[in-house]
Image 1 (cartoon, rainbow, N blue to C red):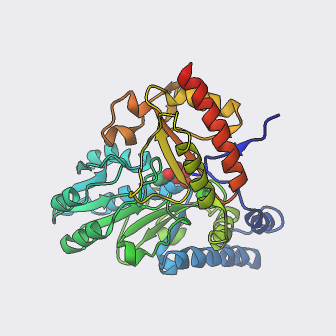
Image 2: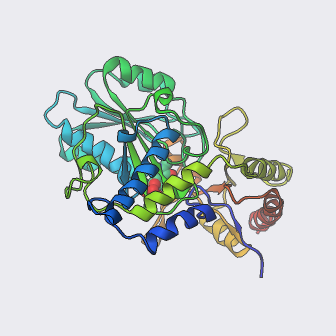
Length: 379
Ligand SMILES: Cc1ncc(COP(=O)(O)O)c(C=O)c1O
């Protein structure tokens, strides 16, 4: 059987063995509820606190500025809708959202409109980065929130946030940064990024699925979306996922271990570029800052759906940007926003390298991907 090569780390990453080891006691012998006052409960609370401290420190935040959630998706919903609810009677009625944001941000629009806010999309360039000057022009003192991601999850292009953050500060608008793809890949310090709210997720960094976190700058008030027992400083009710949060805290301490990720990605890109017969259109050419594990391209005329099935048969796990729902593949909203036609937006192919990737795998992947594309292209 052909060995599998996993090149979909932007979708999710394998759990690191140290993370599994750190979580195991909290799934076996430790079962206390962190809200209980007895010794079992206090141990669970201490474990949560240690993980919170680690996550906070990793982004230059304070302990009390981190709220654990069930995912990056929930963190974004909590930040955006929670702020909108809190400011429901306030004077700021506009919310600006990058046109190529993840759906967990974009799809809050309906709720925000029901709450009476006016939503405007910030246009993006061909690599899915928000046009900074256009964004700055739109930000004034009628804006409550600006949501712009740190790097795009499909194209991998890294956003220049400084001038947007500066304009937000000048006008009193809040900046929310979805850092789910950049966390663990780029250094993030909330003060440097200029974010008032920032979202991250454990399963993108070798941690477990089902745990995320919202950074909320001290003084920024939000309403909870889940009311309950007052957990997470009354911002998010529900008994905490202790094992998951412990795993998150462990993963955070491991993200800077040396890996072959970037070398493998570079080798993969160079290898495919060396196959001159392949009509590959790279989404982020040289000169565009891109995440160290991302490679994104399309082959004109080749639907991603067809290519992905062939790659999977050849033992390569990768993805398109297209979301698959009820059996139909939609064109990527990111590529549409970036100016491509619907047909072109159905052609995006994303290969993402991570902590398990090796250069040997990358070499083998060049061979297999090259062969598949050659066959499909000439078929
Ligand atoms: C940029 C971005 N934001 C948010 C999310 C959602 O995170 P989660 O899977 O933890 O809900 C993802 C996941 O792919 C993402 O890439």
